[in-house]
Length: 285
Image 1 (cartoon, helix red, strand yellow):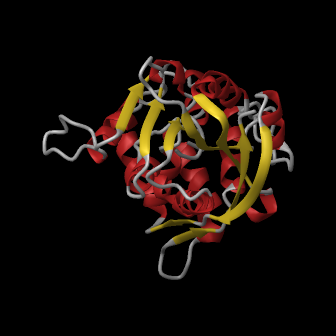
Image 2 (cartoon, helix red, strand yellow):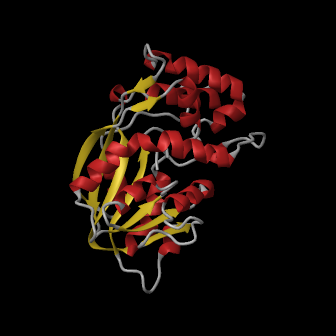
């Protein structure tokens, strides 16, 4: 899911799919993005993010993780290539002036790739974060590898790089809902593109990127929603269900996701799905 479940995969959606990207970005920033706040806090606390931190946030989305780092005094650069609507919301969040004309001190937001954040006067980064979790779709680490290849040359030697992945499916209630997306998108293959997270996913990505693992941790990040409607908006804002909507229709996806959410509805109507996410801390050699 994307900053922060996974990156949106709009190109896989059929040409008939019509999405209000502005509304989706707002659903992401207002509902879904906050689900990973415990993860952001755990990473920032462990790495003692503060005034001396020069952070490069990959796939920064609507900027909640950046805002939390800014509150600790970090100097920030966020890059986002796939969701300009989310980046527009990040600019609003990180702009202290009423009209958003000037970013929060020490913050840069870049619509593009990590290479677009490079500059002759830009100091090397000492922390690179990739908070979009991998490990729920086959091949979802490939895009992360490309980002790291472009980002690590901008980091100083010994800089920390943080990668994030889903925990084992038996500890991630949302896995059962994600299976709906892939099953509907590819009915002949019930497993679709979904696959369980593997123990060494993050280490393999780090190794391919030439990074040296230097610690890891697990963080509980329950997905909690005010009700089923809120859960639907939040989950669909990730873009993970676009292919399913194209293959069937919006009503069918809404119906089956609602059914998949049923075991996680509580007596007061709220939806609560316990999840565990894993993070890896690596270093630039």
